[in-house]
Length: 402
Image (cartoon, rainbow, N blue to C red; front, side, top):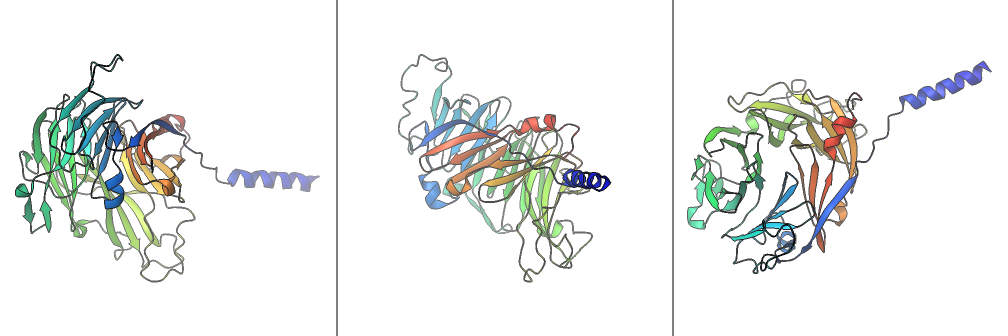
């Protein structure tokens, strides 16, 4: 009898030690749009043929969605139900908008508006609390400048439109009316409506931080030689994966991947280590790093050929207004793992996200200030706008840890 009791207790103990299965975070489809050139459609044709030459930007704020369609040179503002509220478009690359051609009887009629503007090759976009629109665009060829020091062509600016679609000004490197930027990686608007422009060149990352009036406050250059070394393995090669601003503080977050090839084959840290560093935008100084938890079962580099690189584990999707880090990694073709860390790097929540990557022509994934993950998913015959209510995770997991 005693032996049976001990057996039951042992089995219960093993069950208690078994890691808890990661739950799936449900995805909600908000609306879908057709593929094409009409005002309520998204043009994906050139995207498929030209890769990333033509961008599609997506941004969500206050329950509204903004789409910058590079192939059609137009910007759409849509409700969470998919109603087209505002259209900023280039008449040379778009047919006359039919959704605004006559008076409508619904409640949106009074606020719907279409504005023509000669947009060229638009890309990233952001929106501030006053509904001012910040849009990346390319300047004309005569205004483009070669920068031999950076090894790039300076060709991008950020157009700023008021909430009615009227162009206020454009922002370049020095501020309003400034020199064009190199390639723009991303645009952000902080909680104080300050614009942050993140650029990339073949040799470095450049960050420009502006006041609400468009004056340059801070400019920071991040080069490979300036990345902090890995203390436990100084020979490890560091690479910068992403730069993201804090939405409430004058701080940048840098995601660094360390290729720790010199570690012994039996060392679980062999391969890639992922760390998040805080960078003071005023001084450029790096703070103490946060360690991103390793991928259990995914560090299998023992016996790997010398020089083989292990793909980075988690990628930083963004930081919410409370300073929580939202990271994603790919589990398989259509499954992704979400990890949420607090400011101190402690795990707050883990969930699985499903995206049919194998069936997508295009994907744009972002995080809102509230902590909602949303995406534009481009398929063969439609574009879907979806979200995962990841903002609720922190409340659900309060007191439960990771």
